[in-house]
Image (cartoon, rainbow over all chains, first blue to last red; front, side, top):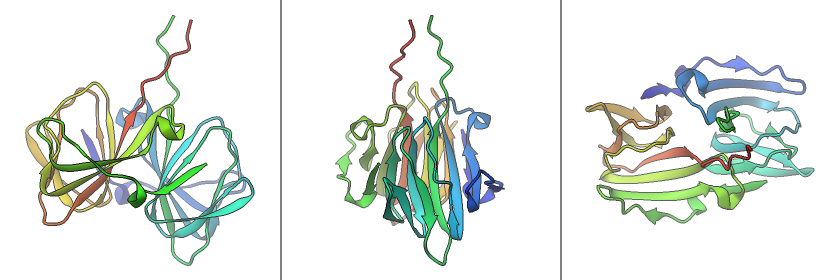
Length: 118
Length: 118
């Protein structure tokens, strides 16, 4: 069993093109023994946003604190504490902090399966 | 994109042998299009606990509120808001609410892969 308070996990800046004021904690990943999905926590400064982007994997997201929007199909959908979001693979999306406090959310992604078949 | 506030998701009682004062919300599962992992939220009443049990899949857990312990290798490990826990497959575990308010946590599990190999 592995336990950590996420506040103790090192934050790294997200430098991916189009990101602004975004940092990331990798809390559970292959390093901790996970084989199926990784648990990361994003923090967006006021005015910060992730890239408007698309990728072949899904997101499962839980908003921990703050206020913002997720951009989806060209619309701004409000998000706040307790909201849970599923972004399917290949769907364009962006998270924006629209408030004057930090926006913080859990964002889970699959870990590519080492298929043992054949 | 699918969005819901978890407070709006129906709670079901957990009747599994040994559970006491436990309810569960299935927030993201195959119903919402997830193929790799499911996001559920557990609520334990004061004095409530999950079964002391073992299974072949892992848990990734985020404590949302309250105070309790996870029983692991015969020891009570304290848990509180912001703690993240990885329980590997086949490791015995139990969650207990040791406080007078509700203990609430996200608990993710893998969805068995429909392997497309030959």
